[in-house]
Length: 196
Image (tube, rainbow, N blue to C red; front, side):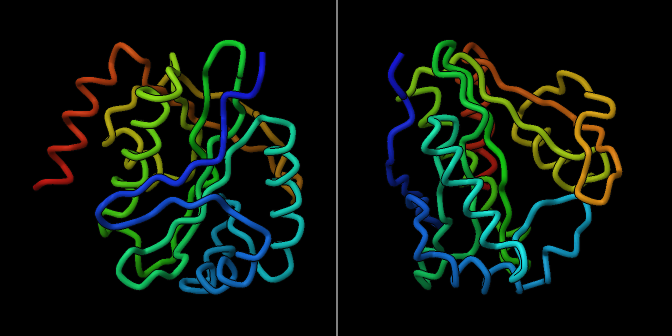
């Protein structure tokens, strides 16, 4: 089956999700220094030492039709404030994960994440006809787990000793999902949160 993830720009009231390009490298680094996000041991935010490998892997996944990459742009300032992507795409079964999401510290807890997830979920379910959208996060990333549940995703389970981190420590991964039949109710819930 041909790739169903094609480059697109998604636009909301607060942000524009624009296709990530190699020339966004310096803007991503600037955003990640707002809060020195790479120091969070349970996330994968690029630093000046890891940005090239981070981008190389991201673009290789997109070429392999397993990912679609976005830069998160603040509509007010037109600055790149983070990144997100569709990943682990199953083109045959129309399942996809939303992951690798991070925002500059000063944009966290501002409504940005809710709108980004809304745009990605809406596109996945209403344009790509996804049957399920998955979210995965580190067991120790309580803020991420809370944010995912707040969207209306249900926890599917925990993958114990799922991946080995660069430092050799194993990660337990918490898996959440929203299925297509749940999308209408989840959509209403997210829209209510964005309006209030």
